[in-house]
Image (cartoon, rainbow, N blue to C red; front, top):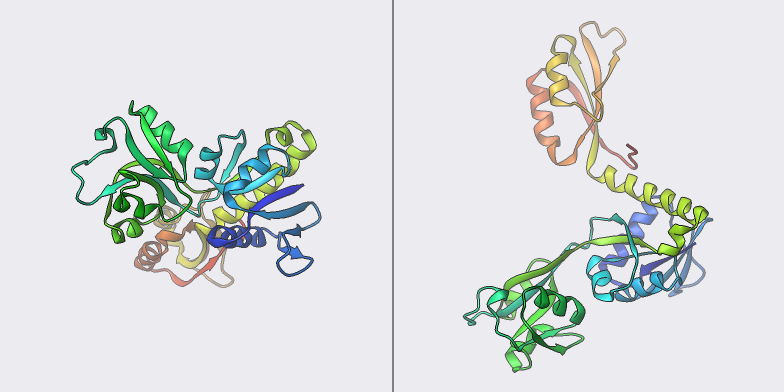
Length: 286
């Protein structure tokens, strides 16, 4: 089964790291090769991120990792299998800082829009009831309003810093995007292929779920178990283990939210817990 992966950039690095953590490290036959094996069942092909929906929809690959923005712009029929969480960005409408327009719906009919996302831009302004003129560009979109090429732009941003550097201001959001695992509808219609896709999606999801969690262990007083259960409920309650010769002590094990570890440790210490240990989790299945 072929998986189309981004051939360069941060999205490519994060996708390869995720597959590696799921036990699917790419094996390249040579440097700069555009094909690599991913274990015994999968083969990766490396192409431009924006072309991946086309490869998947046309059946050149059964699966692909690309941005939701690229899927929307392509207009091709692919099935969204899993939100991978990384590569977060927004497709926004931006005008010059000195513009009187504060919202995209205030733009007049005939507004010239510079963008490398003509489909998404056209659909967005159609939803606002505003006919526009598209000025297609392939790069350096931010300079277009300053050169008189366009009145506003529709472009990708993560933090907005690039827009601010070019004296542009957001006046609307077209869509939000993250990296997605997408599949060919034809592949999903085949029972064997669907089973492989489900197995891969489950493996990737287990890694993503583990990133958000930590495994916590602590020795706690038996007399405080009710309060401990409130602090570390875990996935289905903490696991309580008798401590050899512990007497009034037991060991509590639980999976906790990574972003709450600091507060959780403080609360356990307040209950008299000792020997607290927190470790990362490689994979976590529900």
